[in-house]
Image 1 (cartoon, helix red, strand yellow):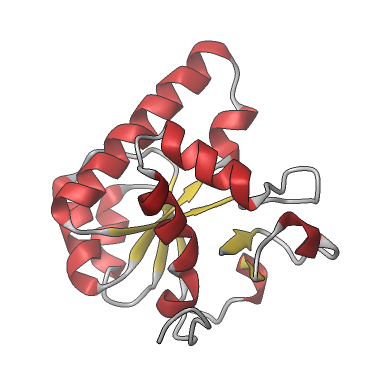
Image 2 (cartoon, rainbow, N blue to C red):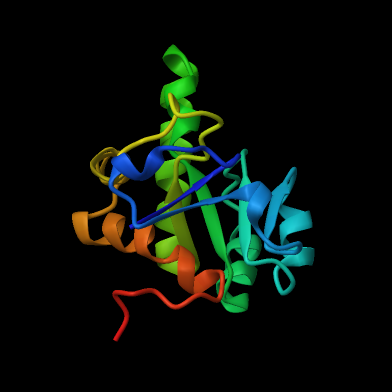
Length: 159
């Protein structure tokens, strides 16, 4: 299993991941943090990973990312940082967004996007939060394994 953080953070091997990538360590043109669905549609063929905080249920955007072979990044720390009703709304949006990704064939990656070691999550926590978002155990584990393939690296668990 693999994770994506915002920064290089030392000492995260103990969290159970094979490798931890950082956004700042990715090649140019790999990660795009979008403000709106239209910008994702325009860049779908050029970028590999898309983070969109609004989780708009824009079917055209989801199909464009699915057809391009790219993936959406879902931050598992976003709902944890939220409070009260804000957290419930965000969980609901993420859950619905994931169901649309599965329906229209868009890939997704669950990750912590941690800024420091205190925001980092273990593999079991990531799988559990994925299941809270409506994924099966197998789907949650698969979403944590997909990062190397999207980044053009060989995953050791692949034949």
